[in-house]
Image (tube, rainbow, N blue to C red; front, side, top):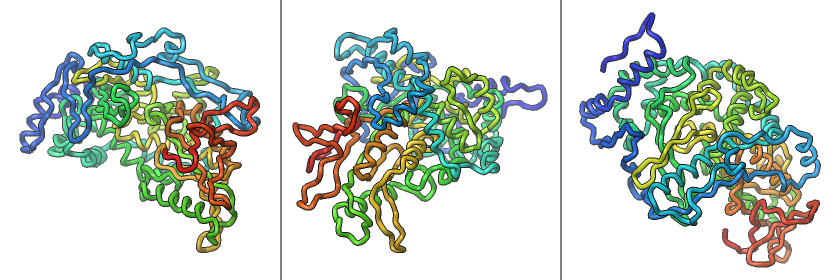
Length: 548
């Protein structure tokens, strides 16, 4: 494979243009695949008219993205708010400001009513309307949301001083990408998967990695100097995977983004650098995306806590109190994450303090200068296509073999991106874990084999959170979750956010939850001591023996 010219007088822009002409040439990809005698079918549809007609690349038992009709999506303003806070002191603190950021872009259009549903009907079956309906749904999901600046500041302040990279680690994370880095990233790509939007599969890189590495080092170096990836690397499309519920409702489908393989390799370079350090910046109760941790480390302590709570006479229990379990589920947590919060948290791990960029009182150029001073942060901005750099990434939505019009990404760590899990864990939900620890929650107190008292109250796996709390700690935990939602752009899924009582009373009947009532068809959670005495729907409290 011929490499593009380079040397004195050869500019970055010429490099990027020549590299693109070679990098994404379909003939070169097919030639490499034939040389390797690979049994891989490269997608044959490569329509340059925005790829309007392509195949659905899902396989196996995954349900295909095929709609006879769709429920019409009706855009609504951001649903997170601070109306349910129980703590009067916290209400007063946040009321002093700073408050909510102004709405911008699509969020402002939705709030003003300038954006409306594609039809007044409840369902649409016309393919053009379904394409536009899907585009509107995901454009609204990935929009830049209004953020409560005071809440986000609380999240940043909650990160403990121990969660810091060493200066050598910061230098390593942002160091110049070498051929060795690219070779390791190519080896990290999963094989046996479908091709990317441009017909390139991982096997093509695995067959001749040295040639690709020499080429991609030039590409990535130019991308860093120009503060943007190539136009093709900024595109992608969303494949929907059915979960459960009504198939016509787009909220019941999981969006997985297919991005160019070149961008995946660039993300893998950063992932391989960041992953060994995740244990430094994430607490031990976060059992996802960190060395030596897995899902069982999150499940087993919860099962043990349930057993202890059901056996109050165990000698290991230090003090018997009513215990409750809270299960938190977020609505599209990966997709709604505020990118300003991601960069602020990563900056704090690097020892740099950055103000909230949504604050109109702060100079945006000043914030960008702080970010640009740390190469690792600038790499994250480039990979995400962060809006302040002026080159946002775009996406289309695949519906019945056709692609919708494109829209810009304003938030989130899209599922399907290689860096998504790491950025979401350390750049979003770690702030929630730190805030909950700062709240001083009381859970199950058990003495270990050395006789030391341990307070178990929390287990996390990415955005899945289980809290084991005493009655007095339920409200502070819910307040912390509300602060997190308003500072990160998130929102609790009220259908799946559950509360239940674990500890039996002397007569063997579970006690009600704090302020809970078991009357009616479903439990009503009425927090005691609210100023207006009205129910606060922050979770669903299960009645005894009620199934979730």
